[in-house]
Image 1 (cartoon, one colour):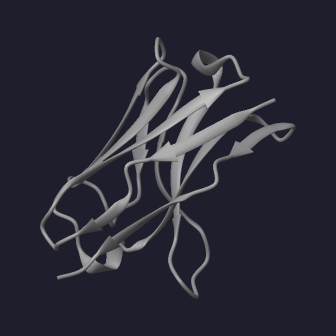
Image 2 (tube, helix red, strand yellow; image 1 turned 135 degrees about the horizontal axis):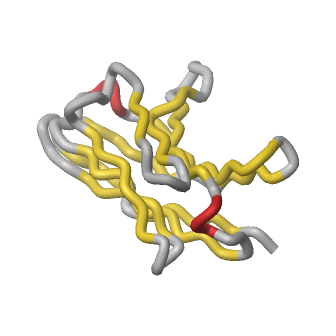
Length: 116
């Protein structure tokens, strides 16, 4: 059974930092492309950052220079370091593991709230 378990969300003041983690099980983690997506209230889910099995990264323009995605294949975990957080970063953040349309998995999400 595939499981993606996110952690690290919470309430943080503008300008602060958080690190999200996503621990995967039930998949051969090292061959999967991993990603972080987010969904704010009333909005569609959007891509935040992705990292391929070969560790190439891609970021949404809105987070470039502030967020960093990384992975530790030995721990089956993908991370999202978020710095200089803004109120508009408030959303539920979801972890995604993708190999093909038949191998596409999502975590349950973790809430990030940026507010003073």
